[in-house]
Length: 330
Image 1 (cartoon, rainbow, N blue to C red):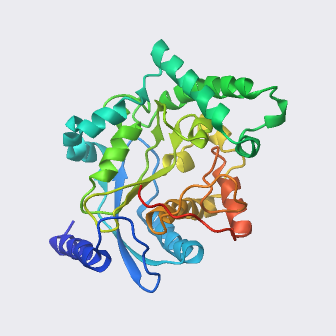
Image 2: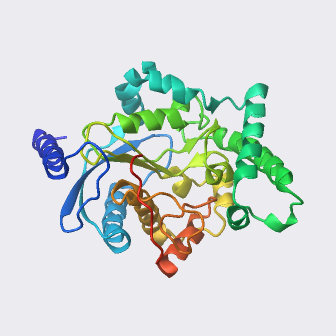
């Protein structure tokens, strides 16, 4: 990247700090335009948007943020960074106490004791979920005789399908979860990376977060450990937030994802679908909205499976008129 661009990005970050101020989450006035610095991190083994497609996606996202969230933003894109270069950049975070705490919830799919932990957690997750949530998000809810049967099915599906995801062959012949990329598929890696991200506010990356863990919401369990996006507290910028969108679930052409997505997104709408899903994450980042599970046609209801095109059509049909609770902190 040219020095002039580096200077511009540094200036934008400094201006945002002066403009936004504060140390905790505060409402952002809607009468101004907010600069957001985007970092694009690329795993060279995986399909990715071209430069023109990436710009088109961001242009569409900017429009959706104004339409659905009420904010005007400007995106400033940093040059592409390889996944392994980013891994080296954040490697120092591995030794922090918080990283060790986060890894306590991360499970090894090949460990029998860890699979037992997941089974027990899934039982707790399903038993505590409101029936309205289960009816809305568990396919074929009526055919299960009780919650135990639901949790047993959910657990078996989680393990079986996560194994398939982690074993997907990439363009260089390695499996998706082969070292040294295995760590970049996990929640602790991305949670800590976002908390300590410097020089940018939001990441788009062509990889995926897909791991086995406890302490997850039910929609992540329904998606076999896949997380499509994440916003976390950040200690280095005045938004007090940083986010990431994983585009691999949208772009993957292997048999597993093609099947799981159901009706395929028309090629001409690919960037639009990603842009609208990214708007969901910017609802956390800018509006501090929490996730919902029971609002109709709501941008803040995440996809409960991998049929992103169905999710997209639902959100385009009409907008949610209900009040949205704001988070005090991430």
